[in-house]
Amino acid sequence: MTETPQEALEQAALAGIHRLSIPTPFAVGRVNCYLIEDEPLTLVDTGPNSGKALDELQRQLGERDHAIDELDLVILTHQHIDHLGLVEIVVEHSGAAVAAIGVAAERLANFGEDAEREDEFAVDLMLRNGIPPEVAHALQSVSRSFRGWGAHAQVTRPLDDGEVIEFGDRRLTALHRPGHSPSDTIFWDEERQILIAADHLIGHISSNPLIARPLDGSDRREQALVTYIESLKKTREMPADFVLSGHGEPITDHVALIDERLAKTERRREKIHGLIAERPRSGYEIAQAIWGNVAVTQAFLTLSEVIGHADLLVNEGRVREVDDGEVIRYEATG
Ligand SMILES: [Zn+2]
Image (cartoon, rainbow, N blue to C red; front, side, top):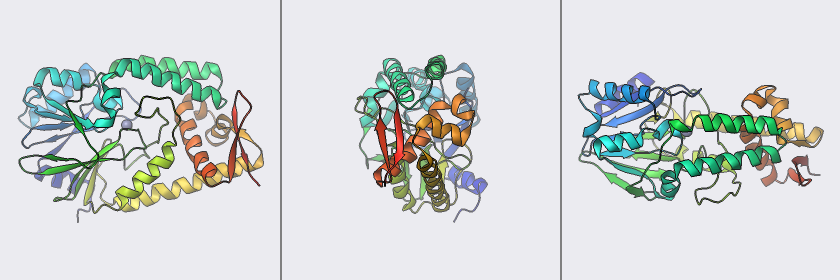
């Protein structure tokens, strides 16, 4: 059993998997991409679309005596731009194939239009949950200003859930684990018991189940946290020695970490239930009661958290949504 994150990185390196730490302009800090030295030579995620990220990617590949143009395959773990923004440039230089969960391929190909529609969906959701219009529109501008860090991705190797990618020296099973985003996919080396989980599971921060449009391209509002909990429970059952994440250090006890995340979800659900039991409140009012000013500066993130936990309460029959035609409020039942 691998005991420490450092040992996990060493074990991964022995297995030909090398972490590349690529800068991003986002609050999350650096993103982890993974070079897999095998046939095909593979990069898991690329980092965002920026000169700085490209320089770092080149430099860190160079440290392993590789270059971008040698890459044969790029695997994408999910749709977020900090993970895939460089994919077009990497493919231009290398001609690499691009593998990603097939159900996300159309969305990934239509990046610009799709991102615009995603932002409109987010604004609508914020307004319906009581966030003031000026806050919702300010966030939309911020999101637009970050769009240059993303890119289209032409998926040439669409993966089915459970499909095995064969390498010269290993097999990786692609498993769809939506929740943090609708396209989250993890890659499992059963023989070595190494799990590449990207943002599905992160050690030092919880992976926010952000509310996003479903992969079918519709504007349906899905229950992201409910989906995420189902996904986490599946991952909990996996006999992983360690987990390689999309940010930060490897995880050597994923069961304990997942239990901690699930316990936190229960505590937060109860706190939100308490607030709703006091009086009916909108999602924004609940977020303000919990996070104060952060509910303004991080309005979409905190609203996603509130709605996710309120969904749990609604599904349990403890809370109902009351829609006055403008704003949705939650009120306790019974
Ligand atoms: Zn992400």
